Image (cartoon, rainbow, N blue to C red; front, side, top):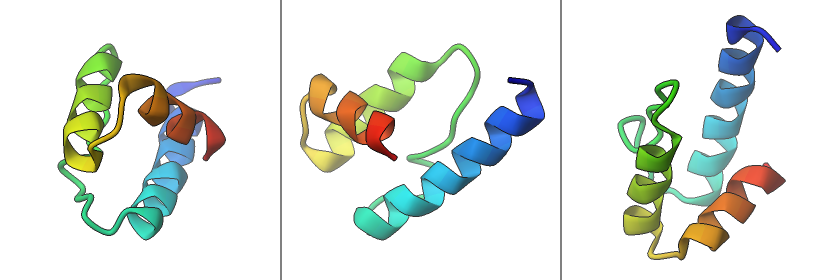
Length: 61
């Protein structure tokens, strides 16, 4: 999967997350390559969910 395809899929996933969790902002969902742990940590704080719960949410999108 190249970077353009990954970026497109992440944009779709962001839209679904924002629909499901209205409190999320674009800043909360900012993805930077190599900073996946930081993204998961932000989502944990914002959603009040465990790391495993956040990972499951991201997998299920």
